Amino acid sequence: MSERDLEILRKIADRVLKKKHAIVASVLRSFLEDPEAREVIEKTGLQADRAAKLLESSLTKVFEGGYDFPHALTIYRIGLAHVKSGVSERLMVDSVGAFAREILRHVSGGEEAAAVAKALSWNLALMIYSFEKVKSMVINEATSVDEKLLGRLVEVFGRRVYEKMK
Image 1 (cartoon, rainbow, N blue to C red):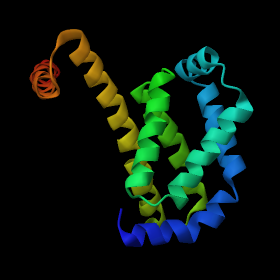
Image 2: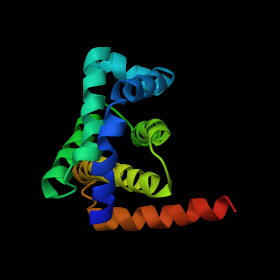
Image 3: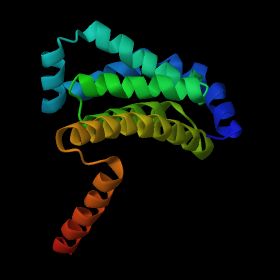
């Protein structure tokens, strides 16, 4: 994230955050249409008002976060909260996609849209990294395969799958 991106996010924050209730309502509707998301909601007992507050907080962080180490740590922890609740990587991606769809309705121009896309990507990358770290720890604990070897195995199997799908 560049200083210019942060400047743009700060500039459009009020405009977008004034619409946060509508944005969050639409994102929640998207979740309720997804069977996997509904299953996670039921399993965790997450109530709609609590979910809305969590989503509003995440939305606010997109525009008001410092995009520095403390912000990164906060987003990483949000990713871990998703992992411990059983949220898959796919659901994380879908939720950021739903946020992008709704936020982009309230921005004007490519520069604003680009800054929003960068911010959402930055946040998603940290959340996915937290998921990958936990997965790596589980595999290491269960099999004693370290992260480097796991990475190499994923590459090898990735090549195999890629070749089969040609």
